[in-house]
Length: 257
Image (cartoon, rainbow, N blue to C red):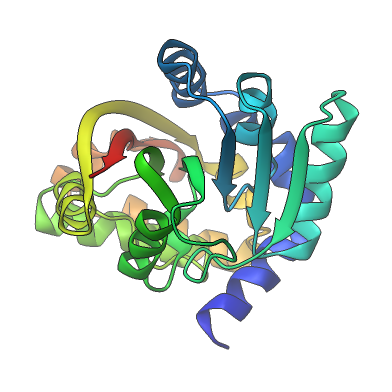
């Protein structure tokens, strides 16, 4: 199965989980995003790429003339539409589309957001090129995503854990990789904020409907890791079962130059 087909399958069957997920519906990163947008007071239109449950589009709609929620997965888009419209929002549009081939003209969007999604993209550099292409001059791009540690072995471990839990996971990039990719493609990084992210193991597995046998394999992989990994990721283990572990995400603010 190809990458995009896998994403559609995975998120199609689990779409409702993402609308109700507390880490997606709330979270320190979403609060910071809303605070930052309120301060910068952008005008015009917002495009939220890979909108998922629609939480970013929902939270930012009051600050824009129009918001467009885009997602690859039809079922996810339908759930986002129901959620956003149930909150009385009237200025939202919904588009099925691919983050790596955005259906918008050059220099047409003032603000672009993408939250907790880019680690699923098969060609993330193409995604960045597309964001740069559609942004207006001096347009704002805000990326939020889970990131891998800068240390190579910890990076490999974290991405392996994510892939075991979710086959549609491609790669969580390092902070340094994001900065490099964005600036090489003409988006200057202006600010970056880091957030600690605690994953509750059972809930985290349920989000992707992990089978009991696969969950046990993932549990064994993590509990049998060396002490350095368990310490770095703050893996909490009780009676041989993983309870939680610690990751990190970033919010990066960039401007088209």
